[in-house]
Image (cartoon, rainbow, N blue to C red; front, side):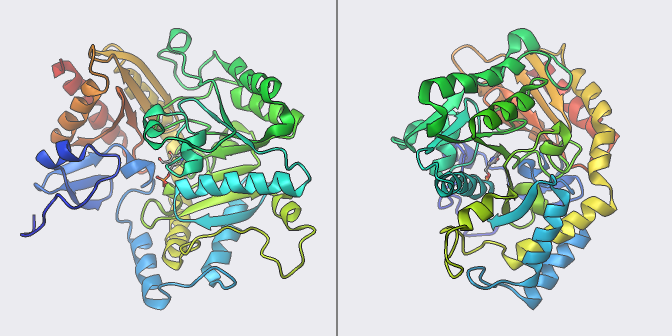
Length: 438
Ligand SMILES: Cc1ncc(COP(=O)(O)O)c(C=O)c1O
């Protein structure tokens, strides 16, 4: 490490800062499916960074697109101005999206995409004369980023309890995690589609005329890989339609190939009213988020406003940042040229078999998978929730593989470029370390 590089000033996000700084782990380079650690080791990336580097690391096509863009146009505002790549990217994204989508709103992160989508939902309901629909519905164990909207509809207590009052008028669906009925399921769980009817309970409690939108992750990632029960998302769509409630899919993790299709909406054949994305839109190279909105949302908000009116009072300095647009366009090229979504789909069986090979290993109480996502749930040490998985994380890192843990769940999401023998290496390392773990 460079002299004078004091670790104390960087207040690290979602990190036990004091614990980390007593024994730091730094990544100094990345290429392909590997990171290089500060002590010079190659570390297999089992998490695509933070669910984002779907095209692997350091792809020269993406790197040079960003370099070229930085040299030509480093920044351009998107308020009453724009630059060509923003329009090109929006057109390209709508062509990839479910047919109903015809507008893309750019932002800088998943959290911004979520809060923007919630605001669009409220503005839309108001514009169509449903101003009483101010309630937002999330789901227990949902993760929707860290904005006030996102933590309000989110359902992870640790992300909420420090921050006192959140958005008013929010309620939550029951989560779909059901180990008693679904443990060790391969792919979509058989049991639990009826949990979507929990939305009917909330409609009965609050009345549909007060509910603007429901937001769910089609496959929940950050809370520990919760795969939707068969039929659940269809059912949710039906109930939303019946009651005039907008459905938002938070696809910050699932979009761009993670589950073997451009979007979970496509894979599950359920079209929401909005899709929030970020992360793999640029394969993690430059921060960017995007809200996909279905036909009619913009028009409803614009109607009745004069042509010189700003239809939606919302936006970010870095909306459609030129470097992000260049990175996204090059990333979409790479996904297409290398057939990475199809590749991910083709690896699913190997991935599933390898993961489920961990089912009989010590401490494992569930293994679940969908697309190139895997969850391995461990029994907690009595009185020490999270400690066992955290130890796995540090052990695996020392053993040369990067995994992610949340509570006592290991969540895996490798780059879509991972090779079959690298999947085996990832899983074998986990098996080896589990065998040694108390
Ligand atoms: C489903 C979901 N929504 C929103 C977010 C927040 O994204 P960001 O960290 O880019 O703000 C995440 C991040 O992991 C996510 O998984």
